[in-house]
Length: 114
View 1 (cartoon, rainbow, N blue to C red):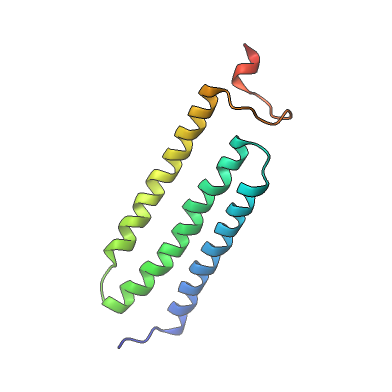
View 2: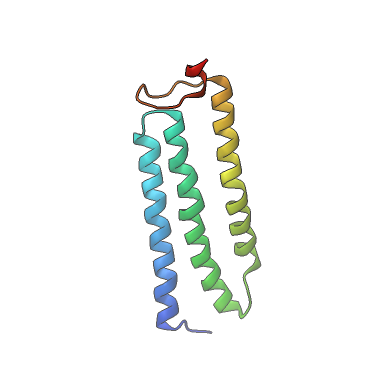
């Protein structure tokens, strides 16, 4: 059985801890931010960065143990980095089209100028 070098263990632990902290902050943002447009940023950023860091930590761990790149984690990470921003953009565009209400202090709302 392969044993991990302490530096690799430290790097993996840092990726997983950073991922967990960013996911926690995204969850708090989802719960506390006042309107849809602001709430959209919390989970989107958290899923992209938080889950991405966790998957990179997992990729490093399993790549070292199997003496090759862990393809599953690499594909999931790539898929996540491509789809999360695109889906957030589409949700924001749909909300703008439906004129979802936002906080009164928001500046430059497209339909207020009409």
